[in-house]
Image 1 (spheres, rainbow over the protein chains, first blue to last red):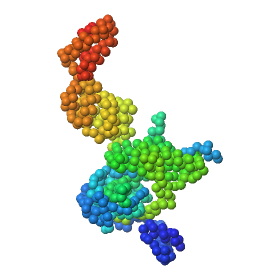
Image 2: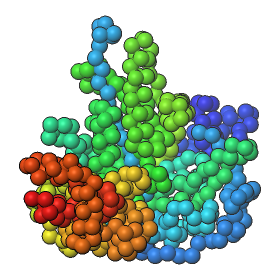
Image 3: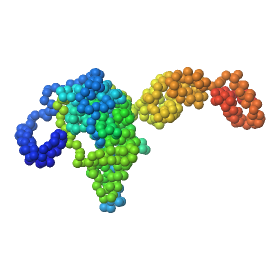
Image 4: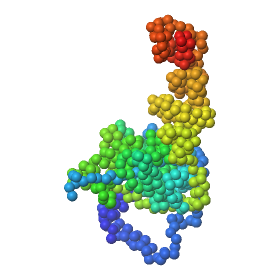
Length: 94
Length: 481
């Protein structure tokens, strides 16, 4: 069983605010998902080559050729807030 | 064991991030340049907009393989990318495309000098490709930070050593050799000030003889090789004191504060990121066959060691002189261009390592920062050979040529630097000198020839250094002896 703390950790990684009442429900729900995935462990994969991609494709490149970029205004049109040609975000201090 | 008497060994590993100098970004066609107005080199791909797909820049992969080969690495025949997930405003997608388990290059090494002609091998654990994040500007006056996404998607190579370094000086030397090796490949600016080369360090200490590693701290935010060395020295002392005081080092990430010359906690182990790496589904794998790797290997330019040997052999330079030239690729190239135009390579080398470096050091500039043509430089040397410039005047000429960008000929005329060798005008001056220094003249006539030097000096003074001293000496001798 997933602990309450683990559920909170997952929520925090996903930047989701959890209502404390939802935690026990999510514990069970996430547990079910993990059990479902665990079925994969029952498969015999010893003759199957590991793969990182489902498509039979490789080496899709682009040449190092310049394309037009968005102008500053267009780029900033998706910004919630902007200032001095930049995206304005809440103060971040490392 | 009495810890106070215990001797410690320092263990250091370095991570270098290098921006590649491709024309465009790693996964889109936006310009890869430094210093443009903020957010003018972005597109839906590097802004991480939904529905866009990254496509790998072929040149970025080739440059990365070059780096791997130059660092004596194995090149992975099968290359894939992975997502490193974290939330930060400089990362518009919420993940960085990087490489996790199959880096493009691994298991390499480079040698550093450790004195007495001894070399030490520093192993390279891995070198992998990834994309750079945007640039965050912290506005101290306002309660906000500003993000510029121009840098987002700049191709990066992260080069990681094994923990083979034992002293801060070794770390410093490693960085110099690494930078030089990379500069020779012409795949990056390698400019720390512009952030195209950045370095993080891991450090731990352990009792001498112990084989397991002590708890490490990770150091960030060093803006020069000197700062890396200072931060490592600070941290080494801090570790030692904590342990000798009976405490324990806690695993954390620290920021180097250049102004206060100390480290500050950035995050502790508890806050460590959980990056949840997984294979990047938007990029297919890349397979580089043996022949392609061999072709790249054959196309690698001469490395610093090879150039050093060749300079000593072909140009008959001392290893000290050749070492100075080779330590700066633009200087080495300048020397070779000069050698094509002028036969005395030793003389060229003396002028470069002497007068030219003096001018550059005085300006705190590198050769590539100034506009000095091989023609003008060789012209100065030839003017000295032809007795048109004295050594002193030649140095002045070089300084003016660098400052004004005018040709050597123009400068000599404009500044009146040419030596006076014409007998008629020199004799006028010499006659004056002889008249004004009768006692010395008597001494010379009675056999004290060394006093001629004094008269030459007087003549030089009268001509403000422009007289050809050899000619003056000859003329005085003719007159008096």
